[in-house]
Image (cartoon, rainbow, N blue to C red):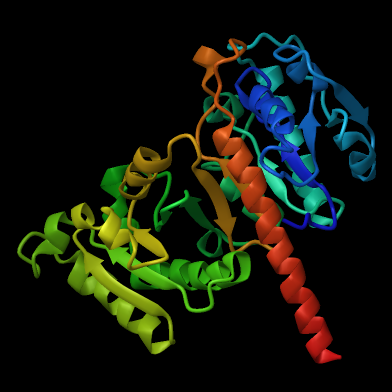
Length: 341
């Protein structure tokens, strides 16, 4: 794999969670997994509290290349106060937020080739005034993208899923769904699968909302009144969209071979199959942004923080996917520029 022109920025997440540990373990496995150069963003003491490996404190992303072979480069942006693994506090939340914002800014300015974000505690962030449903929405806002045009996709080796609605109560899903919302999310998904993954004609399969996809209206009309019209509109635009299908038949191996992404209508409809299949290697990628952003698809795991038990597989996968997407984008942009010339 050819590395992106710029190193990746990896925001460590909550310093009391497993983020620092899995970032360090990812660096330790850099050669085994052919990882592109990256630098961590946050308080280096959070890594030193859980790892005795080499750390290189840098002041500029440009110093990453020289340090990466021998030590984990860390760019300090905030003081997390007293760091105790497994014991989150508001100082750590401020550090996590500052790190995420700074890493996003570095990526937007092209000082970093892509953004990878570690797990944060939303309950801690809410205590310091954080008002977004999650990191996805925060980063989209910082990139000037509306929430309708920012899409959360979860990806593993054999499955990609997109939830049309995300962090809202299940009781609110029906009111939130609309033809316009589904079409907007699907358009972004199709374009991004081409740009980030090189899939020329992405195949989108839609799940129904109700059991058995509503059974022709017998147990729900959302499929007839919302999902099917959205699919017809997408097909009229040239997007390969099919469904809606009963969600309980969409995720076995033969079904997964027939599509490139499953478009699901609510959070758990998408995340349960993804995490069942790829719990230790699932990646959250935000589609529709002017930058590449990924994240391991798991939480802070405060209960095992500092105990050397955290599996780095999802962080490694997030770094690898971010680098590959950034490379594809760079190649596509170069080809477009050459064609224009």
